[in-house]
Amino acid sequence: MGLNDLVEKDPYTLPTIGDIIQKTQSSNVFTVIDLKDGFYHIEIVEKHKYKTAFGFDGNVYECNSMVMGFKNAPQVLQKTMDKILQERRGDGVEVCMDEIVIHAKEGQKHDELFNRVLERFAEKGLKINPKKIQFRKKEAELLGVTIDGYNRKPSEITKNEALEYRRPVCEELRRFLGLAGWFREFIPNLTLITVALTEALKSGKKWQWNEEM
Image (cartoon, rainbow, N blue to C red; front, side, top):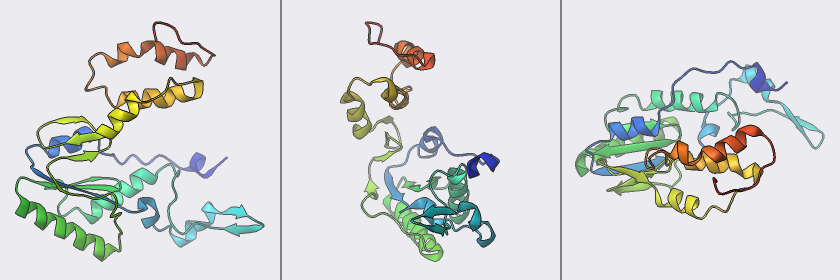
């Protein structure tokens, strides 16, 4: 039995891409900031560190910060970032775990929000990933979707990944269907189109490609 088996699920609500898109309607300027090593910014309380103990090369180690794979890691990170940016959250600043969306109708307002977010990051010792920042764009990519304040569409990266995906074998089918799910709102009747693949996955048995797939 592992640590996740002993932990109750945190009910804190995570935002969906639909939530964020709705809040960015009519905005013309976007910046997306990626928090560098997001989970590692969350320190573990000293008295609980022993619960993360693991052995390596004859020694025992404990984690000082939250690790990926912990059941409630997404909820804890979301809750922490919501609190840090609560002053502006929902008013031009949207939080999706380790990604922060800054948006406004006008550049001046956007820049004020951007500077305030950077100030809060500096106050809390948070680091951003400069390679992933999308700064002052007319449209931005978030969670596989391109948003521009008026429309939404699959990002080119996500679209190309789907188009170039090789015919999946058994163990890859689940991942392919997960990728296909991103296009549900863009492709009418996607559930019906992929029903043969879904049924093959549910059966848990070996299967072969046929005309229905």
